[in-house]
Image 1 (cartoon, rainbow, N blue to C red):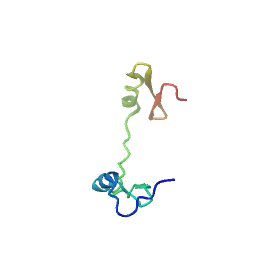
Image 2 (image 1 turned 90 degrees about the vertical axis):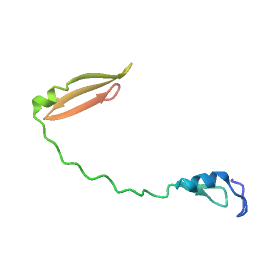
Image 3 (image 1 turned 45 degrees about the vertical axis):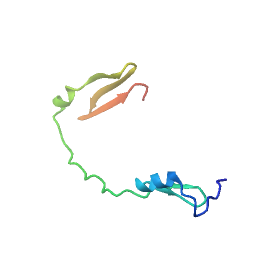
Image 4 (image 1 turned 180 degrees about the vertical axis):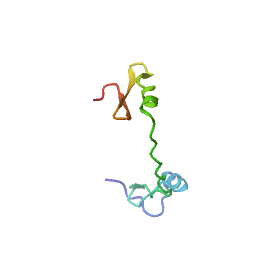
Length: 87
């Protein structure tokens, strides 16, 4: 159970949270974060259709880091990536 700090105690964490617009500390010591998103969602991008021969140029296995690869394949005119260890 948090300690009741009352209204007088100035919490340096609260000052930091408020200054950055990410939350506040209540009188009971609980941290309230997530004041909402102030940006509009990104606009939907138009779908791009590429010739299957263009997509096939990317087929292969790409090493992201040692032991972690992305296998790229093409099926039904769509390109897919599968990471090491995923099904």
